[in-house]
Image 1 (cartoon, one colour):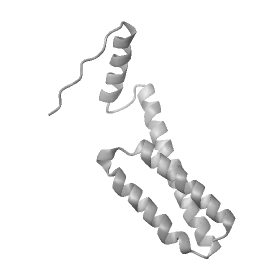
Image 2 (cartoon, rainbow, N blue to C red; image 1 turned 180 degrees about the vertical axis):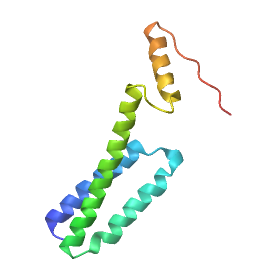
Image 3 (cartoon, rainbow, N blue to C red; image 1 turned 45 degrees about the vertical axis):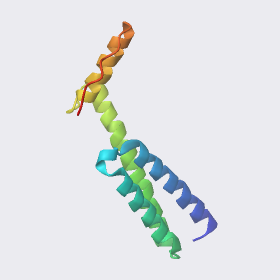
Image 4 (tube, rainbow, N blue to C red; image 1 turned 60 degrees about the horizontal axis):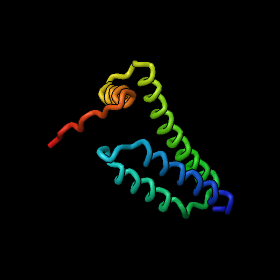
Length: 111
């Protein structure tokens, strides 16, 4: 792997880990997913074929774009009131409304 490919792979790797950290909740196995991404990059660090290196970098870049786009799409659906699960959106709206008049919403007890 040439130095420019290594720099590009490092950039894509950082961006993918940022997207995983930001968009994948802990309940959905964030730790396992981060380990999988790390292992894939380590296992493919010894690739010497330029076309396979570019293919792997493109795949990681595309997946990063997918994670960011799905999250952005979900946010747009919430903002247009089209979302299916509206509980989080309602909590946020109620919290803003309560804060605008100087109140705070009570914490919900969950055993």
